[in-house]
Length: 165
Image 1 (cartoon, helix red, strand yellow):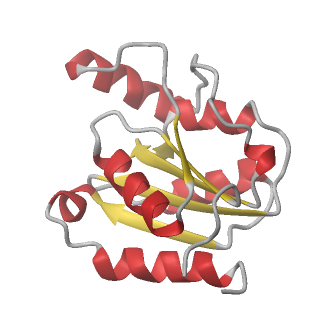
Image 2 (tube, one colour):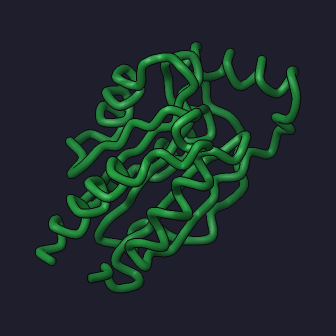
């Protein structure tokens, strides 16, 4: 059973497309709106990777485009980020800091190459100010090889249960 539209919003940042593919799958399964956080700085190539890693490690903010959706209109906000130097991406950090309203329910997901997402998930919770209803930690390689179905299904089930469905 789907969560009805306008009850859930999936927000993500993706530099390479890995986090985007997971966000699109989650939004589809929940019948949720989808919001891509767009950085105003070009992050392509090696230079973009270096700048992104530095911002992640140092916990910096960056400039992002104005969002299309107001997250205050939703009962559930699902936030997705790549892991940069064991931290969340600077565009997601900026998004969270620019939306100080705390919502009823929030869930987080991370995509990563090799480093642990434990620090990232703790930082997301600390910045958000309350525990998530669910978290999902995915390795980039498994996403690209499409070996995430079981983990993703469990995450989606928890999100649906949070709505009493």
